[in-house]
Image 1 (cartoon, rainbow, N blue to C red):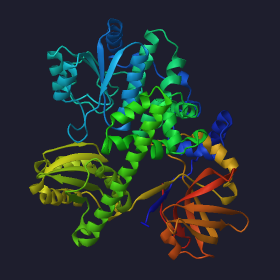
Image 2: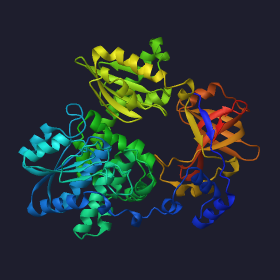
Image 3: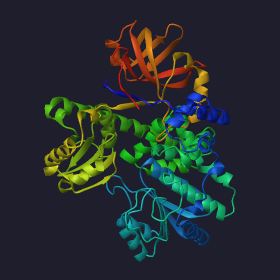
Image 4: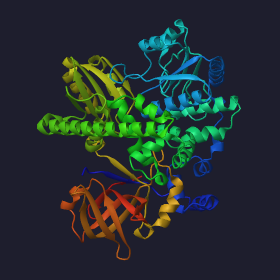
Length: 574
């Protein structure tokens, strides 16, 4: 296992405020302390994320123009095409809007660009084909904020555009009928971190209000799908996103969406125990898979399915494609590790750059993410074809990958992305130059300490409190995700009283005691520690505390994140 630096957040010094907030909101002091350490702005909104606290959709710049144009199209029978994207955010956005338009009598179709042939975003050829099919209004979802030329081209064909997006804006905004993006200049909308599907949700809220339908009907019909896209796009689960996801997860238990219900059944999930982890690691990858190695329209059709049989067929298809994706992903991952093992020069590189002619362009990003997590180094994987490489990269804290690519732009045909993830195209003959230049750039900005991952610990928790009562008290912090991670705890000087492997040595199970209380702990992917630990060793553990149902009995469960012999434990304190 890779060594980690432990950082225990300092105690909050205002004990009177901790007690006052704990009493007011019915929170245990440990939760109040964690939230104060994290700099929580509003306890009221966090503890009570009520639907009534959603912001007025008309506060978003361009909303009235968008609503008016859509209602005109619906009333006059115009053909509307929703132009989406092939990831989960784009697919859930597309399905939600198409379903709403059709439910209200609209002649609505959709278009998802081909990942391999067209790539991300709006393109002129697609607009031409959409216009030829009779569409007079295109509504983009999760894309379009940079489609200045494409929007102008659509206008020459007699097609109006409404842009809905959440990505960063450039100086020039497309001259569309309306542009909905809370990040655009002069947009007064108070919450800027919506997913693409969140922006669509605000549009649906406004349309529902204007058409004088009840908001509850809208929530019942789509809040679960909106939550799915929000979690999958790794949006911070604070503010409106927390409201959407909290209520969306509840809705998933008894979802009216046949496709989502079929997918939940297909993968064997207990619908009464759906969490952000279930969505992020079980449901979303199956929807994402068809965007990477299949046809993303299958995922849209799953969410639009009107009968159980169709829904089950698409759910089975998505599950099959995901297995194919997993097989291909593992093959690429093992090949990448083999290249690193066989070539000593890579061990000196601050940024790992690997290329292969047989790597699937739609999957290398997932593998780059796995390698970055394993090595704690920025990693770029490149798929080579016909003298050109298409790459996908992931980075580590403190290294802006987009800025690094910008510094190497002479080697690249094109690039885009942000601090922690980016894509690029590089001529094959410039590949080694690019590897050298990005490593020279990184060498000036990264030190040895940057390659040691930091594990932030919220608080110490004695073994006496590792029980279901604490688990239930902590549940007020859910749903967990980006911007609101599950709390991480530290417990020191526990003795190992039992030690055994799980899953043929891949995982680890321990029984630990402080001399009075005993607790089992599970370390996933920590099987290698079996060779270094012994019964009787004293250890310090860093962990999540969760509830688990086993053979019908609910128990508290310690999920290890790291472990050290007590004499070796060190780290920093913030």
